[in-house]
Image (cartoon, rainbow, N blue to C red; front, side):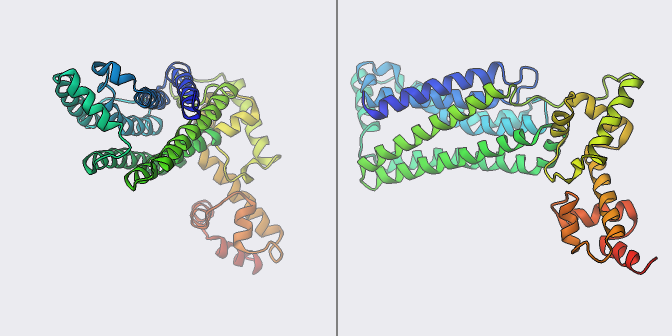
Length: 368
């Protein structure tokens, strides 16, 4: 078996295993990661189809070909639906979302009907042209359009995730938010590599093209293996946000958890972590996110970030008061208490004290 065949079989196997996990075990009640599972399944089908074409399987059974070609138009929608479902769960179908499937339906029906209506010899001729190492400009244009289609969808999905990143951190741990971001980054890189391999073939370098395909398939297999290890090590990868208005805790439980939360911020200075999320707090206290969220939102603050920022501002006030001359710059204090944005620091500080950090510091120094 040639290296490219071995790598493809291994990558397809890993993709199928992870796709199955994502669609069945990752988060059975939320469904967000099921869309990634759908994408991985489609990618596995694409790789397997390419391997069969490379080995001439379809030349012997031409009627079995042509069914998979339109599936590439589902790549983009599946990535976009993942972004929708992870930022605004649960995923709901609407006319605006069904529209994203229209190109696939039209192309798939047109391809299958037109291809299957041909004779066996005509099908073999088309297959030979499709697998040729000298593709026509027409074929290249179609491939380029497909890659652009998926690439644009991936960029849109990444933008949606970035736009809702702060909201995501209130419900999910930092590692999950970073996982979602790194996955879309990988997909962007994958399609960029695919575009590069197409350009190599079009420029008349079939050897470099096959090497590029090898890199795409191998990198996908390695990334899938990495995700699979993460999935097995930290199940579930992504749990859906829990609504806190549907239940309440007993008064002693609320008091006990409130004390643990206060101790974490006041004694351990947990607020100093700029990436702190409610999921991270739950991990530190070994308590369910649902219980933490309920106590924070209904007994301690308006929401998790209001609570964190309140402790950060209090810590900044203490530093300005205790070290009026030696605390360093405003930016130094900002970083010490956990803020990573000067505008956010100024806004939160003024909301909670009525003064900007600079004004508060001048007041302290003047003895006011």
